[in-house]
Image (tube, rainbow, N blue to C red; front, top):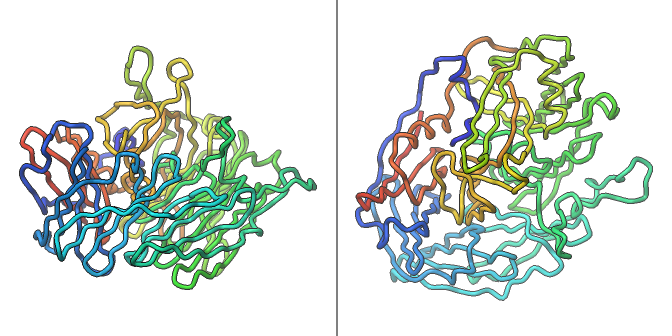
Length: 501
């Protein structure tokens, strides 16, 4: 990624414990290898170790099925869905058929692209399925089946759609009324879950914003984790976390096998807004990490979700030294300035007061990642800025195609951010100004001195920097290992690498 979670090259020498292995390669992967329309994505079989790679071009698509040893089992070629079906929501695997669910830009139409392994045919199916007075939140793939989540307009009713073999939907509706709260204390005007999930684009239609899907097995940048609403998938459960309420963190657990819901909440360090102006949280390893801050004080707390007890509670004031940090206070500014000049500035700050003042004007975020039985924690804040003339800028992917290092694009439309958070988190970040510290803790969350271990995305970044203009890139998790595939356009080869410790 061009924005690494642990940027410690300023301060530390770091050794790698990861290895990379080329596990698959094919020649003449695309008819037009230099086309920016070429895309790849992966469909891991969650019931065995098979893997299907999808290679999509403007007028053709092919699926390559591999076994657990990355040996090719089948290759199927056909025509793609019409171009308007751009957003991949998920996939399901039934017997010999891999089915991929797509939607159009405004999520008013849905279509399925099916790869039949037995007869080696690609077929398409346009669904009658409609969202009625609902907005789509996200899609989840669990046990080789698709689950779509939507919110009923102007309410706190969460809908879950599960599809049968013929893609007939079954809807399950849950009430999230416990998440509601008064917009102003004592007011009768209630913030519904719909209002928390949506924004208005001044064209009489709302859209989902401020929600992010978290894949805890991989590192996450604070640009992602600073969102107030997060979606986690852990085994057969989906967890929604809400940090919109200034007094508590709301957690909604949904069992995808039974569709039963469990609601829990955890009080924040203080409801006094004059003390702590901003707050957020992060779920990891059955623990809730909470942060609250102002320009004068910051609190960082870890709660055990299995026992509902506080493990550790750190508080710093602006006059204090931050004794639990393992890096300098790092400030970054990334974007594109006048005449397309790349902005990538990193500097160190010395004072705790500087850190607290700057994060008090930013969106707070926590990222947690575990390596060698130690918890690597990033605490800080991030905010968008306009390096030129107020133009809305975001970087990373256009139509699912990753851009080169430092390239910034306007209004990216990634095709598969819904179902592949690994790819989205690695590439997607806005023109931002971030400030953060890196910390290291043991199993009891006592601070540990020393260097922050290199993480998976650091390795991927180094690997990607060694490539010459990789195209049709995809990064995904399969069998708990990180994978990276790309097209070498010069040689016309598609290569797949596996990374593991």
